[in-house]
Length: 299
Image 1: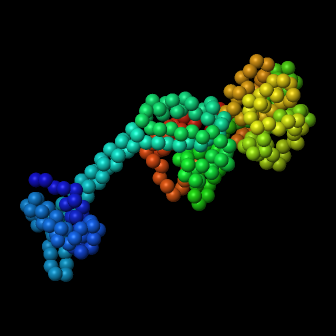
Image 2: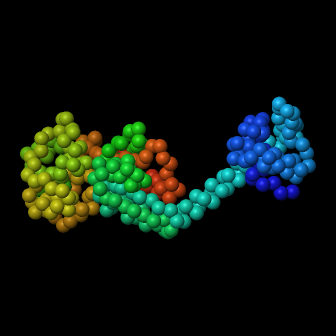
Image 3: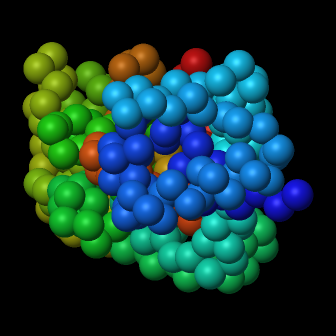
């Protein structure tokens, strides 16, 4: 006895709608073709599944028993097909990620190496951008996911907390502040300060703190590598996030966590709200959460 998925779909539709006309429409079939499917199913199982009259269609007792089994079989078949499609998508899919340069340079490479080892057929696209540009890429559909310092919860976007990135002082080893194991922001008052550009998430965080002391800005630069060079030359001190500290592992420089408990920037994983992630993007999303950065994270 061979029962096709089309026969199961037709049987379930007729059982639910009690109308040959409506059930045929749901299955996108003509009524004669639909009736032939039902007759073929009944002939195949050897029992009458429906009582028919000119006004009414109802399941027989045998039909009611068969309905439970038919729904389970159809659900299992649907799950199997979905699983096969997901497996195929993970062999040849594509995922695009937009994230902050500090994450792209330090946290991302080993995570991507692991992802590539698990899914070598998936094409990867990485954009290392500032937070606003990361969010814009997700909103426009250019990126599947963003890791940014903006909690972009809107009608179009949803953000989930990813990690806390604690802020650190960076200075020369011979600077007076280097003797403090965990300086406070108040200790930085009047010190020549190397600022990141105004559109950087660290600069925006520092300027948003109502009780923070004013900083004595000496220079404003775009890149962390430039901050490192200026600090190493003795021109001033700076504050950078933990995820960017790899830039400052240099002879003659020290880093110290700021004592203030709330001196951190929160990072968020952002995606489009009304669109499901592809299997490839889902796989990266799960791996990213599994390997959240530990630096500066609080629990």
